[in-house]
Structure formats: structure tokens, C-alpha cells
Image (tube, rainbow, N blue to C red; front, side, top):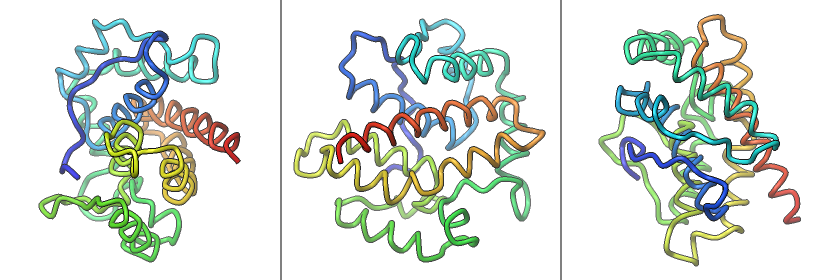
Length: 210
């Protein structure tokens, strides 16, 4: 897996295939959780037609709130907020790693289980990456791959459901709670709100498969 999620961004319109739209949303969220948006990404939000994934659906209001928040910030303010929440020296205000929410500590058994499942999918972390595989951005990138990849033996709904259930559904909403409850979270409060709504939609969709 690459060190950083892909920079390319294409906003999903209602006439796109549903699976392409899902993959793009996972890719966008991976980018926003991995690092503060640069000027090029912010400019896309300012000028692009950013229609909600589904008009009148569960995602419309949180999508519009996220777009508004990204249009209201700039690169220095976004970088300062990201660092205040997720960076800094020592313990961050908010952790972005699944092991912390599932086990209370970093680099615990949930990370070991995740690495085992990634190996079965033929995926691995870039050894030069400073982030472990249980970073939220890495998990979203894996989902994007499982949706949009070309290898049907790996990239299919069954694998998506298995990975989502085991490695995202179990903790991402807790991360969103932590972010939305933090007084410094302005832009990322809105990003967390959309992330929560998107996880809820994905959970319901996978429930229908059972």
C-alpha cells in the first residue's frame, strides 16, 4: 500500500455507477484523514460541482456540511487544526488508530489481526510509512481497493463486507465521537460527521447482504 492516499479526486455524480461512487468516497475520506488538505484539494471543493452522493438521502446533509467546512477554511488553518487534533509532541488529542479504540493501547492485538487479514489479501504497509495499518486512512484505502480493484478474487463484496465488519465498523464511530466532542474540531468535526453517516450507510448495506 502507498504511504499516502492518492491525491486525485473526482466528485461522484448520481449518474456514476454506484460502486465507483463508493470507491471515490472512501478515497476522499482516506485523503482527508491522512493529512490536512493542501491548496489544490481545497480549490477543488471551492470550484467543483460537489453534489451530494444521494439527494434526499442519509448522506446529503452531512455531505453539505463537510463541503461547507472545507470551503470555509484555508491551508494554514486546516494544517493547524489537524496538528492540534492528531499531531503534536507526545500523546495526540485524538488517536486515528483502531487499536487504541479496540484495545486501549497502540500496536495491540487488533493490529496483529489486521496485518494477518491484509496479508491474506496480498496487501502490506509501505515499510517507509510512519503510520501503522490501523490508521483510519489506511483502512479506507483498503476498502477503496476492494471496491475498485481489478482482481475479482479479492475485490468483491464478500471481501469488502469481511474487512469492513472486522476492521472499520468496530471502531470508526468511536473516533468520530472523539473528534466531534473536541472543541478544536471545526473542519474535522464536519469530516467526522460525514464519516459517521457514510459508515452508517455502509453498515446498513452490508446488513442487507446477510
